[in-house]
Amino acid sequence: MTKFRKLNRPTGHRMSMLRTMVSQLVKHERIETTVAKAKEVRRLADNMVQLGKEGTLCAARRAAAFVRGDDVLHKLFTELAYRYKERAGGYTRLLRTRIRVGDAAPMAYIEFIDRENELRQSKPPTPQPPQRAPLDPWTRSRLTRQLAPPKEEKSSGAEN
Image 1 (cartoon, rainbow, N blue to C red):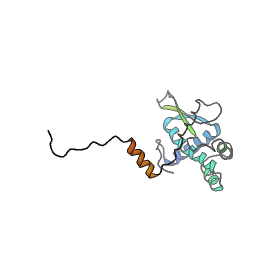
Image 2 (image 1 turned 60 degrees about the vertical axis):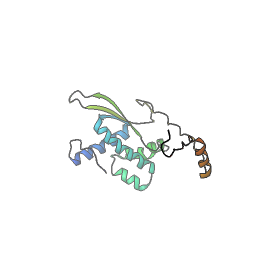
Image 3 (image 1 turned 120 degrees about the vertical axis):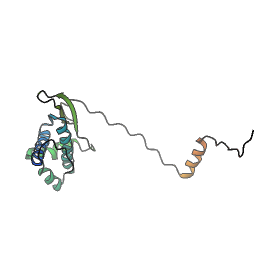
Image 4 (image 1 turned 90 degrees about the vertical axis):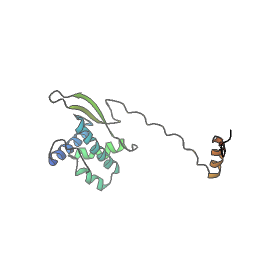
């Protein structure tokens, strides 16, 4: 794993907490937590969905080493892998909700997108512009000369 936020916890506690939160997110498909924790969970949850989409034995073993519970692992490799098979990335959404009363920590919902009972609907994908056929160099050169403004000739010396 790469660089994580410390979240004011020792490494063992932090990784255990993040593993549990990713497992609960996969199980319930929406959890509420602080914004900093949600940003870290988002990275790890997206990686787990990517492993589920891979579907190999190696990917299953890597995911099983991280998530907790066989039901969570089964859901990753069946339901979520099927749901996001066409999507290239960005499987989770972070929605800021409130300020927690006890310590004024900013809270947020993290949820999977494209599911039932979403808090906010997904935007449709932006259409890609049509691809133009490449021009051969001679045609392109002719077109740029036609469309370019005429060159001004510089006069040599000072004429008055």
